[in-house]
Amino acid sequence: MTARVLVVDDLLPNVKLLEARLTAEYFDVITATNGLDAIALCKEGRCDIVLLDVMMPGIDGFETCRRLKADHTTAHLPVVMVTALDQIADRVRGLEAGADDFLTKPVDEVALIARVRSLARLKVAIDELRARAASSARLGRNDPFAAASAADGLNGRVLLVDDRQSSSERIVKSLRNLQTVEIETNPQDALFRAAEESFDLAIVSLGLTNYDGLRLCSQMRSLERTRGLPLLLIADLDDRPKVLRGLDLGVNDYLMRPIESNELVARVGSQIRRKRYADKLRDNVEHAIEMAVIDGLTGLNNRLYFDTNLPTMLEQAAQSARPLSLLVLDIDHFKLVNDTYGHDSGDEVLRALAARVRRAVRGIDLVCRLGGEEFVIVMPETPIHVAARVAERVRRSVEAEPFQVRGGTVSIPVTISAGIAERGEAASAELLYKFADQALYESKSHGRNRITLAAAA
Image (cartoon, rainbow, N blue to C red; front, side, top):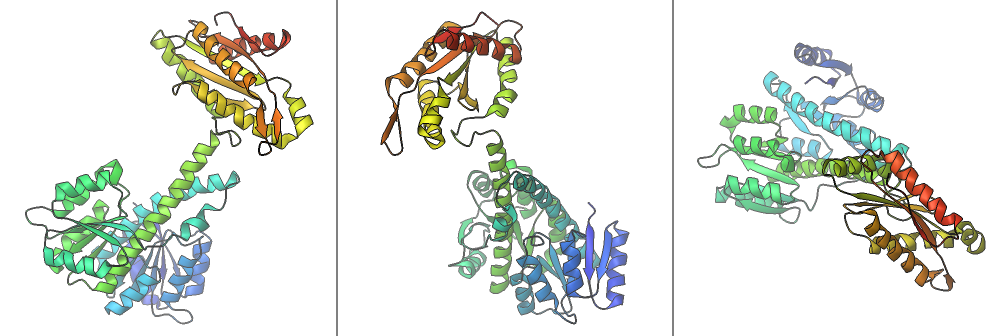
């Protein structure tokens, strides 16, 4: 997988070295010599991954990373710090600034390419979510990126897969009061729990007895329920080939033993924060999709959902030779309701009517608001004479009890008219709706507050 990599270093030899290594692996490389230029390039959307030197004139790498992660337009960009600093305190400082990883100079070429490829895969997934969230924002929703960027990495639920008690106890102690850690010593049980329960991160030891930890990681990546769960490997120094293989398999991060407590805390928090960022974008997209087919006033499905699903329901009914009836109804003299009591009261009537209709039909029936005061009910496996009884039940429930609005201070009597059509052997969705709508017109023409049945469609 290729990506656009921004290399940031004030020393030209370092830039040329990284550029040559990355270009050889078919990555597109752009460069900057200081933090401010790097930030500008990131804001322009010119890169997918940032390789950032720590020691630079002006603002250093730590501050550059902090500014990138604080801006919701660039917070999603993976940042790898490349530095000669090899102290744990420096790594922790970088992770706390938002860095995704550290590479120590001289840079190991295999580790560099493995990490960049891993982050490129992550960036593709995040970009897809961001594109969908941007679409929802254009539909008038609040800025999804600002809310997602506000996610923190605390109070997460962590699944620790480790059968060495001394090791697991040290990890639990380090994360105490910050995360909730649950230990699982059996890898197969861990896989089951990860799929069935809700975790923010899985920490997998490569030192499991008689079991390959990478096998567990591979299984988690292959299951739909655990595909998005961040994975953090715990490895010994001689496990380096396995760690690089793990990055290729989709592992998000790793720590080498002996584990330093502050670095563990920082890496765990970073992974949980990134997962919550993605989750918030995903929730925003799902909510936008839901809102696209839901009527905002009544909570019923809308015209788009009706137009999309009626042909499918008709086709299913035809294939199984089952009846299907369509009822179209609207409120009698609704304009008079709005003119007399105001549009706010009219909206209350529409919401209350939707609730009464819901109570009168089955769960498998599709109830939609088409617009204004017009509603439809699609009743699968229902012949027209049964649908007529349902329609009469709805009509009586509306007529029997006036609608209370303005906190119960105003009572509005309402009636409805309806038309019903039943699926014919060759009926299209358009024809079925046309026949039901014509039957509704007959109801209105003959005095309203009544039900009319159409001929078989």
